Length: 159
Image (cartoon, rainbow, N blue to C red; front, side, top):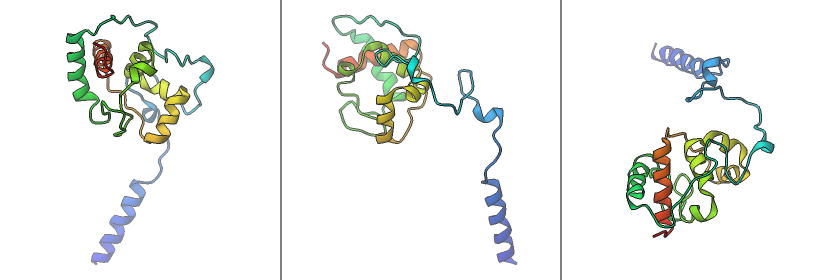
């Protein structure tokens, strides 16, 4: 009797975990639009600025300490579980030197719009092969992203 119940439960679990047909709900992405299984067109991608609403980001010659502090608070909640401020990889890559390697527009676009950039940017795709985890869209606002950028600049030694 116990073996029969165990067999039925195992079979039910196998069926429940089996492959199902895709529906429109399966392709839903927060923020609107649907995910596509087609390859993104890398020809339209600008690797210097990334993809998103930020075409130019004006940075001061010196650090905005208040903005950096706000960015550190946001990063502590939304970023620190995957990123270290050193060059050491945690889940994602470390942040050390990121503001020296990337333009501010690219950083802001990636923080606020990671999905299309992961799909199109060859350097991000190479990093994904190392980290094995896509950066999730954390729903970071423009102001929060600007604070995180300023915190990254502070981390990279901007005074």
